[in-house]
Amino acid sequence: MAKGQENRQKVFSWFSTFLRDQNLLFQRPGSKGGSNLGNHTIDAQTGNWGNLGYSKGKPPRWLFQVDLNSVPVVARLPEGAEEASIGGVNTAQGQSAAVTVRILPLLQTGPDAFERADEFEVAGLFVFHGPLQPAGSSSDPVNFNVANGSLFRVFKEEDPETGETKRVRVDSPYIFAALIGLLPRNEAKQVEIGGAPVAITYGEVVDALQAAITAHPQGGAAGPIAVYDLSDDNEAARLRAELTAAWDGAGPPPQVARVAQQDSAEEEDEGILEIDPATLNIPENTDLLGVDPSVYRQINALLRSGKQHIMLYGPPGTGKTTLARWIADNLPGGEWTLVTGSSDWSSQDIIGGYQPVGDGDVDFVPGILLRDFDRPFIIDELNRCDIDKVIGPLFTVLSGQQTTLPYRTDITDKNSQPYVILPKAKPGGAGDHEFSPGAAWRLIATINSIDKASLYQMSYALSRRFGWVYVDAPGDLRGFIAAFIAKTDPAAPVPAAGDSCPLADVWTAINSARVIGSAPIIDAIAAIRQLVPDEAFFGPASDAMRSAALDALDMVLLPMLDGIVLQDAHNIADATATAFALSADQAARVKSRLEAVAI
Image 1 (cartoon, one colour):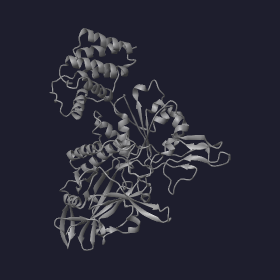
Image 2 (cartoon, one colour):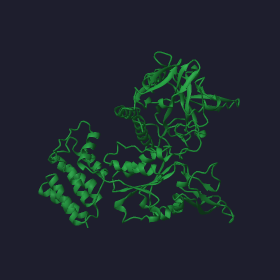
Image 3 (tube, one colour):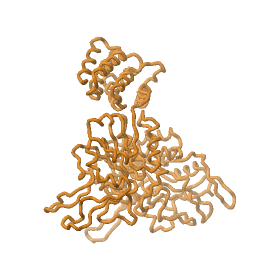
Image 4 (cartoon, rainbow, N blue to C red):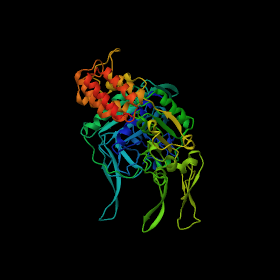
């Protein structure tokens, strides 16, 4: 994957998760079918859609004509217009707070000659202050005026007095807008003009688009839209920083009521999503420090080899949940559902079962998995539920075969058709008695290996249906702490090669008894920073650092060590006393606290 594509994937995945944690959505229309335009066609003579009536309202690409006969190169909307629909966006659930669109340049080589340049695609990004309001449809046309930078939608409303239907324009202010380049600026494409070969660079196309598009963010001045070259890692970091600054600068968004899961954000006419496993790619999450590169290699090897379901297991605090979300967000479709395992679950909660539906009636009600059977389904802490009982009905489906549920479509008729779960999407659509998964559906689950002995066990029959990836604690504990401090506090002094790291020494001793990941250590660092903001984590500990470290041990690390053996408790106490050069009283206190949680 090219650097620009990879950085776009990383930044967009980060931003999607950022919004999702606020119950908001990042919409990516036009991405469902990859580069396929489906039934949409391009007219090479007009430089526009082949069927304007079909494509113009909810286009899968934002078309721009790029005239190579001008010096410099000039970009314009087809038909010489100032306004155009940039895509159909799912606003039905009232949660859509950002949209990215795919810009397809049509290179004009003559008066009636245009050439598609799919490889020169550019991304457009618009971010709103909270969700687009009012809520519209699952494919709501969003329009943009390139001359004044206004983004708007058009709704049909009925005049209460005359009964006539009229079109009402509703402006949709945005707080951030960007053009996102995906190739190096010097990347060139050869075309013919008047029979002679001519080279056009990606940078020339991006510059022409920037000159053609005015952006006018809410509260700011109108001007050429900002450009970010994601073939450069520094530019990707700048995009993230300026996205965050724009969001924070706008203040808290309006409160959004939680509603049902959204419909597909893609165009309805793109057809069934098809996924080629060989094209799947889960890039490294640079925010998730301490994850060994082998984890990403194994995930991608499993996905590309056709393994559909992934199990992430390992010690607590190693980032398994964050990694599961990252995997799901980087799979085609970009939508996913996450639930946390519970001992209270039954098969009815996940798969479904008979339930009262009102007026004394009972009917089959699908569980949460079957209701979201078109997207990755994440089960966090899977072994906290009675696994085999809860998802037992899926055993056969996970092996690629259909299974029949013990529930009838008509409970009053013992001969009525039972419900069936199909292993893959059914051409032509599933019947009323069938549950057919979307191509994007898969299970991604996490298990804390430390809990395996005390919680529900997974049978071999189920475990073999997953691809297993071990997510361990960082291999270099001192290096992790140094990297985390540098990332979260760029002003912090860089430790010298020989500087000690007392917290890393304690972490090493803890992991000799019970492996814990980086999350508790990050919590300990945060607590210490609150207690002694100016103290260094490298080099000999000061009195203030010793006191803060002992408080952090009590608050964060001791609860993780409940049930360790007494000898391990003594070893950790000795390591802590040595690392922080504790006084006799402080060392005795640590030893006593550790003995209290030991067995």
